[in-house]
Amino acid sequence: FTQQLCDEVPAIERRPFAEGVLATLETYAWPGNVRELKFAVERALCVAQGDEVGMDDLPPEVHGSSGVALPEGGSFDEQVERVERDLLDGALSQAGGRQKDAAQHLGLTYDRFRHLLRKYQITAK
Image 1: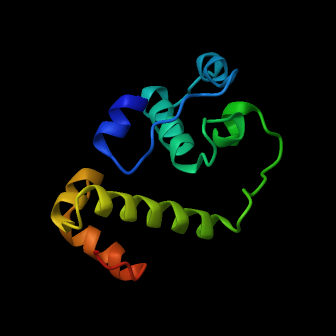
Image 2: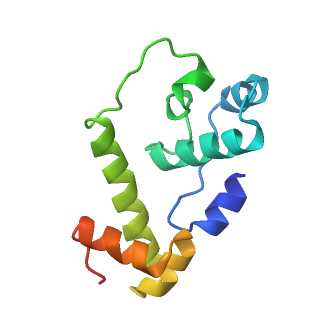
């Protein structure tokens, strides 16, 4: 999933998984089947801030966290905004500022991509 996701969304940086993370992914029941697993890997790659994907980057229900802890840096909405901005910026950079190419890399329609650029006041460089 990691390679496929990074190929589909070049703005997502490929990182190795820390010790124990793969074992946790393998032992989780995955009630949502493959789609839930793919989403968990995608989320982990998007929120990981170190050199590798750690246990805290997995959704709480996967690694057995009993409470909901916000990542450093703010509320849910602030975290989502940061991830969206990073993805948009990364895709634009990889596409050399070509918005249609960046939208395609992210799997977004051009109109949706432009909407997000306006929402976050991002300009192509």
